[in-house]
Every structure is written in structure tokens, then in C-alpha cells.
Length: 421
Image 1 (cartoon, rainbow, N blue to C red):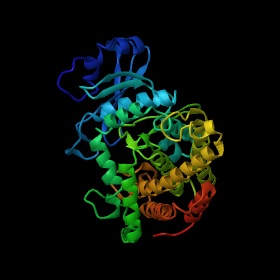
Image 2: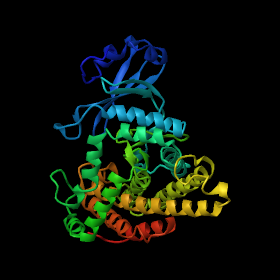
Image 3: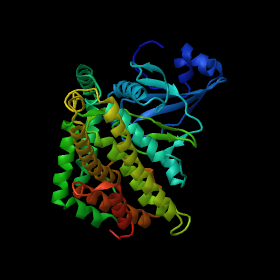
């Protein structure tokens, strides 16, 4: 396919458009036998499963607008460029954590990659009440490896600054995060929506002036703390799982930001999955044990991140920050450990704040998640969401005082027993 004018793919046009790619015909078979299924259920892009006589592939193509809204909200095609480069970096920094990349066409804004099978989207598995061994531990490792190795703790200064300049071009998707995540939930923005019955809880949240101030402090951290390359949209819909494998997908929101951002977003989605379980239970209380498991996964994300970050600090700290020449080489290893503990403390506090903001935006903003949306009983959905809103507020307000994962789990478990409508 030549770099001609962009044209959106369809199941009918895809074989003719991509059939000349040798890498595809070698991997999945001749184009005459291809079968194409559109499976994209996200907010932004086209996604196709391409099957042939030898195998299968995923073809993902950006659209020139926000798919969730339509052509009234234009969005540049270059987001596929940032997704491709983010996937390359994640694959290098944590091998085996993302799908294998097969082809990238910048002009057509499309990426061809490995088809993951028998994987499903993690969020769908959590709604169904499925458990996955080592889930929190693996995702915590992914966060530690990609975030540490993409920062000044690991990278050469010139390489990091060049990379920062490259990803600074992802302006439009950063704008979505900056507004839809950090600002819109806290006032009556045009694109907001919420479940009927939440009005009193929403009024309390938007009337909390200290919360509005804190949310903007967190927004400032996101825009100004260019610590590392973020996934930028790390939630349970951006993870594919099977019984034996866990992969991370969809980093098109990649940008440089605070280390705690990805971790906080991920923990928020496990907490929301936990609080949504009464809406998916076969009978009252039937999923209480599963809720406890989800809380343990939330904790494991952090404890695994902390353990792997510590290992990397001790073994791979080769960047311009906290150099060994200043600490270990001077026989000041204790000072290095103090610095590590302080950095982890700051990351934890940031993560709690971002966790709270993510919960709020998923219930009050434009892009909701299926954990709550698939609860058919509107009154029950509102009750679950009200608890989540209260938890998000508590996390933001207590981020400087909430110490450790057990305190987080105790808070979530307590809120889960309360009525916040």
C-alpha cells in the first residue's frame, strides 16, 4: 500500500488495501482467503481481526475524529504514531508485555500487530467474576519496568530529552486527559453525564471546594512533572488476559508525566471493579469473596511495583538522578535507600490522588466504564457509583496521610459498606 491520501478501512476494503504486504501473507496466508471482522468497541479507533489460512493479525487504524462522539470532534491521525512508538519502548523495557508489532503505516494511521488468543479484555473477565493468577503482580512489574526505564533514573539525559520532545507532540490526546479527567467532572461540563439518582452525590462532590483545588493540583502535576513516558490510559480495558498470559495494549495517550499516574489509574479501575460487583452478583452477597480478591489485586499492583522499582533502583540506576557516584561509590548506601524511600512515598501519594480523579471521571465525565454501565438496575448502579465517588474523594483528600496498602484496603472496604446516595 502506498502512502496515498488517508482512507478509513472497512472489512470489505481491507484485503485489497493490505493484501500486498509480504509480512502478512507469510504470517496469515494469501489475501484471497482472508476473513475480516471489525471488533473495535473503544472510544477512538477502528480495530479488525484479520484471519487467514496460516494465522491471524490485529489491524488498528485511527479515525480523524473521536469515534464515541462523531465527526463533530476532530482528532488528528498522528496519535497512531505515538501509540506505535510507545509500544516499541514498552516492548524493549518490559519484553513480552505488549503485542508483537508487525507493521506501521504512518500515512494510513494503522498498526498491524500480533493477534492475542485466547485472550479477552480484562474488564470483561472481571465483570464475569473470573480470577487471574499473578494479575496485580504482573501489572505492577510492567509499571515499574516501563516507568523506571523511561525516566531520568535510567535513561541517558540526551536520549530522554529527545524522547520527551517527540512525545510532546501528542497534544490533542493530552488535552483530552487534561480536561475530561482533571476538570470536567468537577463542574457541569457539556459532555458530562451521570446515572439518574446520583444528583445529591454529584452536588456534594462539586460543592467540595477543597476537592476542586486538589484536583487542579493533580492536573498541574500531570502537565508539569515530565518524569517518565506514561502509557497514559492504563485501565482494565487496556489489558488483555488469558489463563497464562497478560499483555498491555492501547498506549495512544502516551506522554511524559508523573510516575504515579499510570499506577493510580490502574488501581482506580480495580477499585471500581470491586465496588461494581453487587451489580453483577447472581444473588446479594454472592461476590463478596471476589470483591476481597479484587482488593488484593489492587494492593498487589502497588507492592509489586514497589518491589520491582526497588530492584531497578539498586541494579539499574544509571541516569542523571541519584547517581551511584554520589551515594554508593561514596559508601553512602544508606542515603541512597533514604532517597529511594522518599521517592516511593511521593509516587504513592501521587498515585492515590490520580486514583481518585480517575474514579470521578469514569462516573461523571464523558467516557464511562462497563463495570458500572452494565449494571441494568439503575438504582443499584447509582448506589455502587455513589460509593465509588465517595472513595475517590477520600483518596484525594487523604493522599498525604494514607499510609500503605492496608490503609487503602481498609478505606475501600469501609466505604463499600456505606450508603452515599
